[in-house]
Image (cartoon, rainbow, N blue to C red; front, side, top):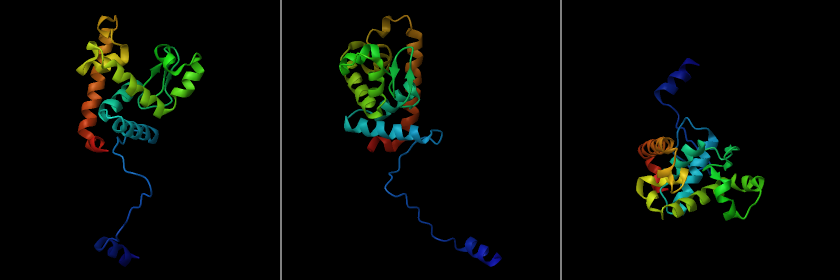
Amino acid sequence: MNTFLLLLLIAPPEISLEHGPFEYFEASSSWNSKQVEMANLIVKEAHLHNVDPYFMVSLAMVESGLRSYAINKKAKDVGLFQINYRWHREHFKITRFTDFRNRLLDPTLNTRYAIKVLKNMSRFYACKGRNLPACFHAGPGWRKSSRKEQISLYVSRFYNFKKSFERKYPAWRNR
């Protein structure tokens, strides 16, 4: 037995790790498997729709903590990007919150709709450049909001995540 252990120390066996059909995705070790899955989905959708993946993952992180099942019942915000029922139900031609919730809990649909909202918001002067996260959170009139301090904190958190993700996950840029 001792001879075998000595041989292992001298000449360790070649170990091949087969991961099967799964693709490697760079993500935080503090995230659970569902959060990693959601970040991967968002990065793929961002590339499909020609938007910044770091922007999108940061937005979902601030909005829901990358939880596709997140629901704010009081505000009626749903999913990864916390799409608001009151402001967005007409796009889906839905009159009941339960129907809206059931549709927007689909993380792919939620991500695609968030991209559409961002592209629409970017038309407004108040949403240009670094103000786009504020507009996503509070609309193009965010500068006149009584919650301006809270909105500024939201934007600050967003940019902290974005900067961190850009530094930690360079592979997201080229997926």
